[in-house]
Image (cartoon, rainbow, N blue to C red; front, top):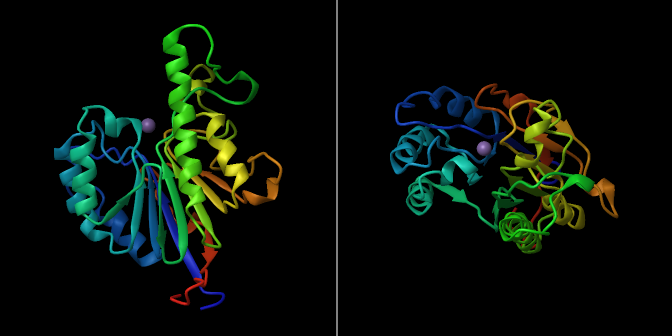
Length: 251
Ligand SMILES: [Mn+2]
């Protein structure tokens, strides 16, 4: 199997509604033909309703390749994330929330992430209790991502999240909302593990890719992709990774 290519289709921000029947079938059929695995970087539903998840689950029958996904902020809107997660899990989606899975030999670590801003302008846990709570949410998500990455032993690792871990892929959005689009705290675990690719959603403008992961070994992060595939599906741009031969010899 050495040299075999695993084609990864990555999409995000589907925002499936109760009336989205049929809206994704063409996209999912194309992805099935063009890719070996798929990852969905959150906002699977528009209001986080079980009814929306049920519509998406039916659409997903057209996607006949292994799929992993994380939640986005929209998926939490109605407080029904347990039901939504169950419906999507029953539809065959590996829902990741600080978890890791392996699809076709590629390790995938997934987390929703959170906001707080980037670099030296990131929000600090100082002052009011609610500010500290906000920052701690981002720290907790970063810790969950780190725990997920630590579980993987695959040669190639994809980090999947909804919020951005770097500023570069949200450039182009209004400056005023940068702190709500992601958090540099998510970048810290990425820079400590041999992550091949990072995918995020949430932002809808800005450059599609960055090589901006910082840390001791900048070469570890080969690419970071912002995705808006629901609006602009183009699986040809999806990165391809050589298939990793598992240590246990199962391919
Ligand atoms: Mn979002």
